[in-house]
Length: 73
Image 1 (tube, rainbow, N blue to C red):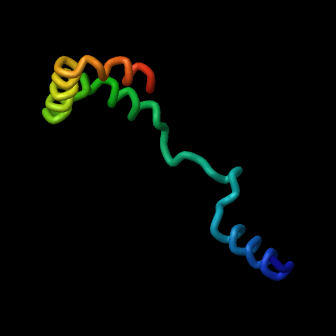
Image 2 (spheres, one colour; image 1 turned 180 degrees about the vertical axis):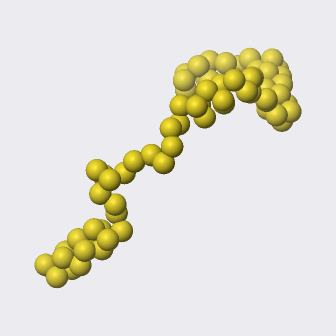
């Protein structure tokens, strides 16, 4: 890259990226985190249970897959 291109790139970066020192949060995030924790348990969609059942059946009918899966962990 030529010096002119480097200078143009520096100018572009300075105009598009805000300085780190001026970045502040607009609000406090801790109350929102407490609300999310108080909401309760996470709901699991039905297709996750179907996938779990399918994987369990596959391991039941094909026990030779167990060493291969353990190897890849």
